[in-house]
Length: 307
Image (spheres, helix red, strand yellow):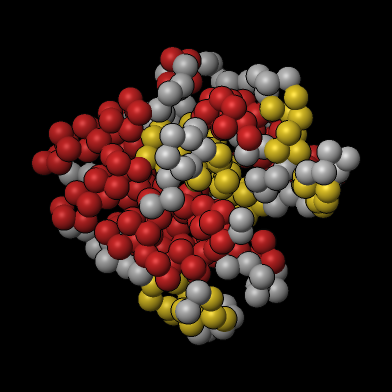
């Protein structure tokens, strides 16, 4: 419905998409005309790297300043493999009302794989048909159009944070993870410690919902650090990360508009979640099944934001 138009390993992937969209938000926000060629060449490269139909590439929603949805995919792949989208986040931004929302979809969610004619784990959509099948499947689950997609591999997140010289977040409760200590209050993070901070779940009293809140806080910190501490060297490093780690159908002019006219909506974005439960089914495979009423509530809120 397009508009016109293993444990520790996968937990790392959940945090990868925190850095993916921010590459483009920061690079676009720090854009200066003297860097026009470098920015344009990088965006063209990540556009060309994305295997997607022409209809999906020729979306003009951002330039028209309409409400947009962006699918963020963190890809876990080994050599020679297509990989799976083990991190699936949908971000909606409404520049008219300056509202937004971020929804993390559990990778084991059982749903129809659109274009495959079967029900399976949602992260298998990317394995079967790449970014486009993932977009179509998420559209089917959430009943909203997915305008844009950004995908990146596992190295993107830490490289973005380190390229910015680290970030600062405000932490609500003290905890330790992966050898790092996170006291209450302001905490300075480098790439590795930011990854650990964003992915921790089991010690969080709010579970996965708490992790999503920390993910959103890290995204905001990355964007603010990039916009407030500008240097050509930082932008160059971010462009290098984007060129080597990311793929997207967001084009150059849309990138600049996204990083300006949509920034208030991004800062105001709330965190949504779908309630549900999981377990082994008759085929001996674990699936997570959304609660029908909770899914309907999330669909309604996303549709409101998308007009």
